[in-house]
Image (cartoon, chains in turn purple, brown):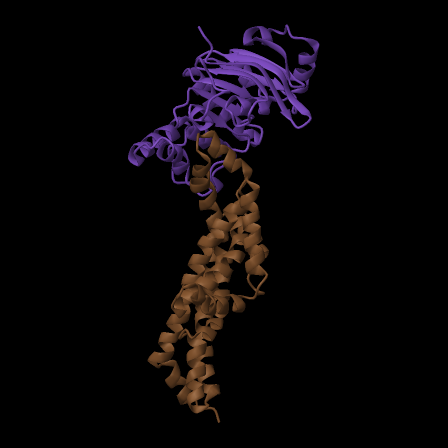
Length: 243
Length: 238
């Protein structure tokens, strides 16, 4: 089986600072890859490079067999990759339903009726069937993040990127977001997840990549990773996390 | 002796009423075009290419650096020499709008900047082109933020429009002045004009307060207040 996305030797420099130093990773269709690592290890930058929100300094990214680093129009690629942010970033002036339907209507030029119908379906899928009319500031953090997931899904992406989706949440709402992510992964949605939630990694991940100092320090199948055969450095990191 | 019946006569006369309408019309159209000019200048200021940015700087320098009264008289007296003959109303709208644009740009720009980077990032992540990010995510939110300061600008413009009397547009101040010149009843004629000005600004202030209350319920914490404070003085000194 060939990878849905394969990044090779990704370098990213901000001025004199090297944030990514030759990172390679790949994710198979339907798989869930969890990215671990201390803050500042380059995980979020890597995610943004993968959907071309940040241009890479050098390296190659194959997405569906096509080298997208050289893609002429990055927005066309981004339409096929959903992204969920730490701070949700729901559009503050739009209701939950409008947030989900905006890109299909304006970017994909779908009929508004159809887009809203699917938005309703997606809101039900993230367990918010009765909050369609609510504005972001009327929703809890967990609810906002689930709307943000529905918004990303509305573009019918082939791949989902999650950038610390539960880090900004109250502990009691973390579970509802992780549950939605797990359900999607179980349905076969390919995903790359930056998270510190080891419980989620254990339940949903196929592979785990551990990053340190802008490089991949360790990579393993999830089963092996959690069986305990990890280098000291990884073990020390894991020891500091609540599990 | 002040004659109150005469003041009332003036207030309810068709001539004063039409003049007040003209004042309102000039203010509204100058504000409308000023917003469009301001938005364009704000976009230039935010443009990545420096020639565009310096174009914006040049515009602000020119229109903030000269009195608006000078700009009015310039438009009225100098443009015809170049074959551009405009009606008094068109001249008034042009000069006031170009001047207003130089101040409105700052309001528009703070509105655009108040929309967070994360919102743009989220919009780009959905595959929007830059103009779509602006059109569907940034501008709708920026407009909500700038509505209260624009209310201030409208009130300011209403008062500023009195300057137009110098280029023979039949607005409130000119009509009051002409009326008084015929019988030397300045107190009565100017009082009538003052009553109209106060009535219009009062209605606008009340409307603005009402709008702000509604917006405060709908916008996220404090943004409106911040913007009000930041732009309250934008158009005061010209």
